[in-house]
Picture (cartoon, helix red, strand yellow):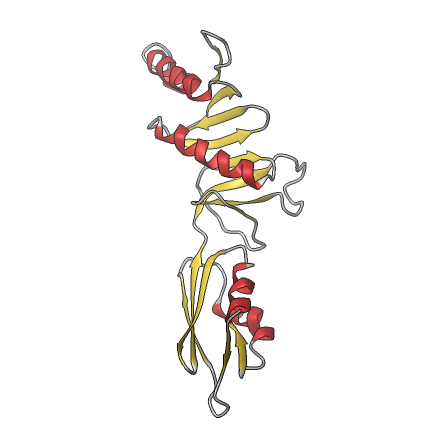
Length: 214
């Protein structure tokens, strides 16, 4: 535990460095830590750090003494990689039913949400499974130039590619099935009208084939 005692005649000054993308104001953060800084003669920097990092939008908070009467606080914002919806929720308005997955694969559910057009993930609210879901999403997206709009993981994996191409991968041999879909799609593009193909549903769970619905 790090404790810092100030010289009685001096007041501790707090200098903040905050990402411009943080959807929380400095005033809100100052209010949050106010109970810990009432007695400025004895500050616990570790407690301040942990309290700030309990805010879902904050990825990391560096809190350190710069000079004997100055404390620097550097806030880094969570970077949104995916929007997230809880498949166990029947109503989106229910608490903890929507949030975000960061670029480290961590789920965070802030009270204050923002608009984003990144890929939508749907799964259960299990942090370990969500971390794996994010890694699998990166593998899927890197395998194709087509942008993934949504990725649903229940007992099987389902992808939606732009503009609205649905692909059911199942729960086995998913990467191989995705590769097979890409080959099939490339061939069908030469034979089927684009408008029709772009709203098709491909089921790739067959051993050596697939089914498609328009």
